[in-house]
Amino acid sequence: MSSIGAPIPAYYAFKQTFIKSKLVCDIDAFAVYFLGLTSLYLLAAISVDRYLVIVKPYSDLVVTQRSANLAVLVCVILGFFWALMPLIGWNEYTLEGIGIACSVTWYRQDAGYKSYIVFVFIFCFILPLCVMLFCYLKIARTVSDEVNCR
Image 1 (cartoon, rainbow, N blue to C red):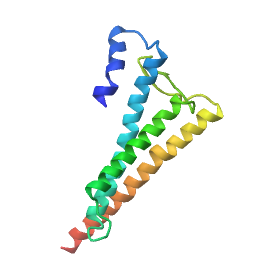
Image 2 (image 1 turned 90 degrees about the horizontal axis):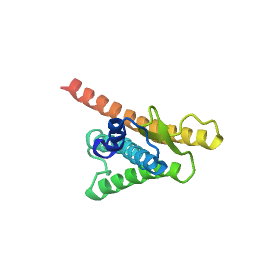
Image 3 (image 1 turned 90 degrees about the vertical axis):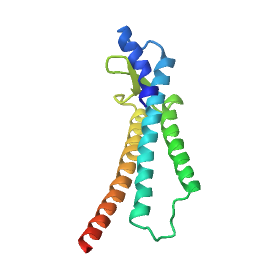
């Protein structure tokens, strides 16, 4: 994230100017947004993996190399999908803050812009957060029960 997402804002910060090109803005925002969303989904996938290994060690659900690769692919596709939407018209990327970085347009009141924000909030924040909370609370309970049994 830092090697891909930081160079453009760093360049404009050192030049003490703002991003003037829509293409540069879109590239910067897409890269950061794509990597951030993919990371969130990967954290949720890792929590499911840990849940299966610790809470359900004897179940039929085992993590194989193929299922792990598929999970990573799904996480990347989901991150790509949500980061691509502003480029094809559902919301847009625009300058934020002092103009050295770009992000999704959060403040427009149009129905299309608002709907994107609501969907991103639910599917890119609430859903992964709930998956992680469920998995790690079950893991904590399992580990606590094991410690208390000894």
